[in-house]
Structures are given as C-alpha cells and as structure tokens.
Image 1: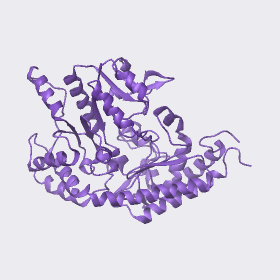
Image 2: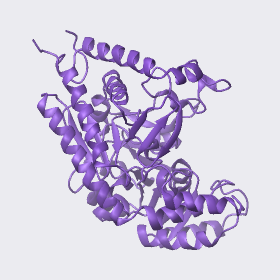
Image 3: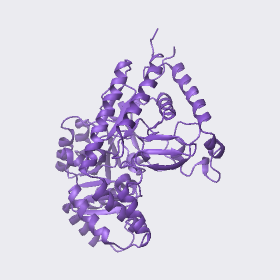
Image 4: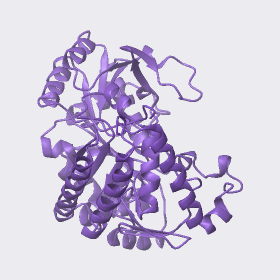
Length: 460
C-alpha cells in the first residue's frame, strides 16, 4: 500500500474520491445540465474563481438558504457548517438582518452620508470591542490594508511583521512565508512584481525569541496577526504568547493589529475580549453585517491623536483609505441589526455548547478508528486536522495539510448531507444550528472515517 496522506493509503483515498464523485454526479442532474460545463460568460465558468475550490466535480446551484440549512436546485437539503466561509457565521438571513435590509432598501442604498444607524453602530462598536475610534470598510482585506497604512503613517516606519501561515485577505504584505527559515514571496501570488520581503518580516507563530529579534531594531511599524492562526490548519497560541507579544510590541514602539475576522467565533467581543488582549488596532470583516459586505477597523486614542497630527501636516488629497461604497446605508443598517440582535450572549452560548458537542463527537470517531488526527476548536469554530497535534506554527500547519484526503472527506460528507468549508476542514456552528444537524455531521464523519481506516498505512 502506498504511503498516502494522514496515515491513509493512497489507493484508499483515490477509491473514496472516485466513488464519491460518481455518487455526486448521479445525484445532481440539474446542476450537471446547467453548470457542469461551467456557467456561460464567466472566466473558468464561475463568477468568482474561489468557487472552483470545492471538491465536487462541478458546483451545485443554490436555490435558497435559511438559518443553518442550504437547499440546492436538485432538491438536496444540506446542514451547512461552511456558512459562506464565515460570511454567514450567524446563519443565513437572520430575521433582524433581513428586516433591516428590507426596510433600508426602500429608503435608498448608499449616499456617502451617515444615517441614524451610523450613530448606533459607532456606539455599539465602542461598547463591544473597547476601542474609541472606528471606520467602516467593505471587506476585511480593505480594513487591514487601511489600518496598515495608518500604522506606517503614524510610526514613520515602513516594515510590517506577520506570522508564517497567516491570512489577512489579499493584503500584499501578508503574502510572505518562510521556506527553510528564509522569508520568500508566497508562491501563487499572481502579478506581484515587487519583493514583498523587503518591507515585511515573517516569523513563526509562538516563537517569542524570533519575534523579539525581529522587533529589536525598532523598524517595524505594526505586527498584524489573528489571535489564533485559522486559515491554515488551526494553530492555537501557547500559554503566555499574547502577553509577551503585547509586551514586546510596546517596548519597541510597534503597533499591534488584531484581526478577528475568523476568531469572532470566540464570543460577542471576539477572542480579544475573552482573553483580555489590548490591541492598538482591531479588524473584523465578513459576518459583522450578517452577510452583507462590510468590515470595521478601529484604533486607540493614541493612534487617533498621532493620525490627526499626520493628517494636519499632509496636503489634502487622496488618502489611500476608503472606497465609495464603504459605510453605505444598507451595510450600516444590517450591521446595527447584527450587533444589537444577532451577535448576542445567548446566541454565543448556544453556539459554544453545540461546538463542544461537535468537537467531542469528531474526536471520538478519530479515536475509535485509531487515526493519527486531532480536532481543535476556537469557540464556535471547529476543525479536524488529518495529522497529530497540537500544531504550534505555520510550518507545522502547512505540513499537516493533506489535500487529496481532505477533498475526498469533504465530498463524502457532502454526499451524506453536510457541507463544510472547501479550503480546509473548518466547520462553524451558528445560532440556528440544531443538535440533529451536529449529530448528522458526527455520524457522517464517523462513517467516512471507518471507510478510510480500512486503508490505514501499515494495516494488514
């Protein structure tokens, strides 16, 4: 038997994928007829190229989605644990957001002027996330890019520090990785003609000596990080890591930007509130307006004071921050509804309980079949990793990826009525998720694990 991936023989992985592809094609005649050769008019047959990253032979077509359930045009009703890859992590079309969207649609969509909702949102952001100054952007990528620009402006420094394996949207500076300990431009970054390593330093997550050395010369404007690495195989911080990170950044006059776009799964105020982080800058995108494109970025009084001074000394003109549709009336109405009535303490309690149930069930299936895998959870965000754990840094996370094995598992789960994120093994619990849906995912995962266990490397 071949060495395979994740302790599973290559022949077993291939056989599972072949069987599940055939099962999928047979079950999706409408999607095959209308989307099997690609959607006409779109490059590579999809309106956004990430839609080709799903493991199915061709995408199914969504008919509707409500709460934690998604229905396709072939009539399949799926328990949705992908939830738009976090964009709908509080469920599809929550009632308060739907009502706010409908009401605002009759009053206009965008004015480039504030509304009553803007007054409420400013207060809600300060109360919930602790920082006094906020701006609204359209995506977390935009928010991170603008925040880094501010960090450079107020510090007078050019360099940014990221952690290996990080993900902060399509911000150029974050597309740097370590290869054998050497910073390089991340392969696959299309059209990049500058050397990003010139002004971006990259060290391993949880490596405090390397972090201290990288900050020591006082040239780094900002450290940008998720509190937990999430868009790779999930990596949790070591005990004391964040305390040391905050101490080192303050000692060196470096700003600390915490990106909570994924870790908002931890609680109503994000990981920062639960753990007691004290960022200089804070970014949250994707779910903050209930699925309507919007993001927020905030900063301290000190950053605001320094930014005021920079702006006062700068001629008027293009700031490089903001886009015309940012902070539009529709987004602000939906953001207010999400913050006031969707992202509640009660909702998070429900999400936390079911995520714990899911984590325990997946772990039990892995143990029952003696697979060299593990499960990790951050609040309502759960991930199974087809490698031993825990992982401590981005290099380990990259090595733990098992692409063909993960794709086969994803497709097998889909064929059994549950949808998880296509990019890695991420699953989200939302306020509308039901116990029965969690148990269905656990059952499907256990069935697939049993099939794969028969082909373990070294099995008789």
